[in-house]
Structure formats: structure tokens, C-alpha cells
Length: 389
Ligand code: GLA
Image: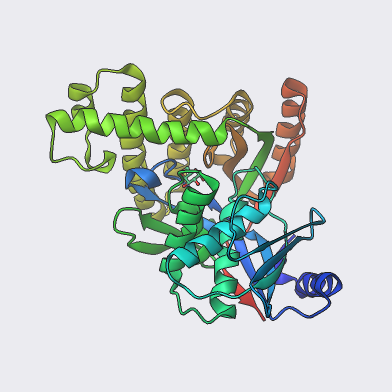
């Protein structure tokens, strides 16, 4: 399904908004999910990432209210939640919290808001590692910025949504997901330096190949607590390294030799090694893409999977099996687990005319070895958050 290309779906949300709130929405925002080609768990280590927005998105329709209440309606869950601007607290339903978190950060930053009504729908699979939550946060802030004419620039909106996730949801995520959703550009990946926030649009020339996601359908409950643990482990690593090399600010600045000489804890050492290797892989991988050497890039994707499996330890048996199945296929250039880990999707680069046969084979093997259905998404690189006219 390609939301941004389908006018009738926008009309659907407007119609459903009207049914629910008995008025027309003033505007509808589309905000996409994301993939990440390479550079995993590097964003919160001041490293580089290479994400892109995809053709799966959240739709968010909104209108102003005359009071200070917030009325939210999830079309897909058929659930409503209401609260007041003056009492923002966790809803107990989770999905409203992504909007409330954004409102809370806007308030903290001193932006003047009024009440609003919003209806939400989308086709980003939840828990698949495609950042449906960042897409919702970006949709909400973009819509409110427009509705109340707050005058906030895109980069500032990205920073505020990251704060919303960190402070209201409690996931200490980096900036990649929001950045990709907000700043995406059709046909381009974004090479983002997560320290300086300098970025470069990278044309993705995949002649004859497609980015295909294999959804393990494992939605691991450990993901967010383990994510925060990985962050702490990286911080411990930095403290250790700083004792010997005080000039170091972050793992971005570290070499493998420094880790070997200063980190004794074997777990922390593995985490640090992965991050430093991944930074190098990304920088070299970007050169591969510039040189049109997809084969070299694909090899690095498999190396990233190995690192996430054995050193960073954020994979799971289902993802490892899928990565192994991909390695057997000559028409898959590269594949790896993507996102935070413990479930979600494998990202792969597959020869277009072999997709059907390959995904059939992998699905059968996955079903027989893991007793699970595989979902397959063939992605297109799409535009970032925007208003649907
Ligand atoms: C999640 C986080 C991101 C990033 C990835 C791993 O998606 O939200 O900030 O750290 O995991 O690369």
C-alpha cells in the first residue's frame, strides 16, 4: 500500500474524522516510517547513520478547538482518548502518549497551544522496527506547528520529538528515526552525522534491485529495556577509555587499539568494538555506494548483522535464521537485522525479478524452522513529513 500516492485514503481519514468529531479537519499530515541501510546503534554514540523514509506512513488529521482540551481518535484501534493541555500524563493506552509527549515538549519550549482534535491512522507495521512511533511524533508536531503557526523549523521539530520520546515515553533513543521521517526525500538516503547533525542526501541507485524487508513478526518485549542498557554500556565504555585517553568525548572518537588498551570488562569491550567497527563500515559503505559497488556494500550489511548478533547482542534467533537464509541466495546482495533489535525486520537488497521466488523459499523455511509467518514489504524511498493537499 502506498499512502502518499493514494488520494482516496486521505479522503478516508477526512471522512472518518468528520464522522467522529462532526467537523472537517483543517489539515492532514503524512509522516513516513524509515529504513536504515547501515549504521545501527551508532546514532546515540555520535556516529553516522544512513536511513531513508519509506512508502509506509502515519496520517494525522487535525483541527483547532475553542477550549484547551485534546481529543485523540485512533481509527485503526477504534479508541479515543481525551485530556486537557494542563494535565499531560501517560494515557495508559500508549498510542496517545506519542502525541501527548510532543505537546508536553512544545509546552516546555514555551510554544503557545490551544486545544485540538486529531484522528490517526497508518500502514506502518507496529513493532516491526520501522519507527511507527517516530512517524507519529513527527506527524503530530508537524500538524501542530502548522495549525497554530508556531514557526518551528524541521530540524528543531526533530529535536523536540526526540525529547518527547526520551522524556515522555522513556526510551533513550537517538535522533535517527525522527530525522529520517521528517527529512526524508524521494529516491534518497540521508547520510547523517549524529554529532554535528550535518547531513547529505545520498542518491540510491539500485538498478534492477529493490530494498525488501523481511518482517520476523517477533515483537520482543525486552527491546526497550535492553536498548537503554546498551546505552549505559556504551557510556561505561567511554568512562573506561577516558581514564587512559581523557581527550575522548564519545565512542565516535575511539580506535580499536584504544579499546584493546583500556577496556577490561569483556561485555563492555564487545559493545565498544561493535560501535567502532560499525562507524568504519558506514563510511566505507557510503564510498561503495558512490562507486556503484553494490556487492561491496552488501557484504558490509552481512558484517553488520554479525556484529549486532555476536558483539552488540541485540539480535534474536529468528533474525539470525533469516539473515542466514539470505546468505544462501545469490540474488540477495546483502541483508541484516535493522533497528533497535530483538525482533522486527531484516533489510535486504534483492534482485527485482527474483523477489517472488526468493521470498517464497525464505517464507517456507521460516515457517518450517520457526513455525512463524514471514511478512514481506517491498519498499520505495519516499518523501519526509508533509501536508497532504
Ligand atoms: C531505534 C532507535 C534509534 C537507533 C536504532 C538503532 O530505532 O530509536 O535511535 O538507535 O534503534 O540503530
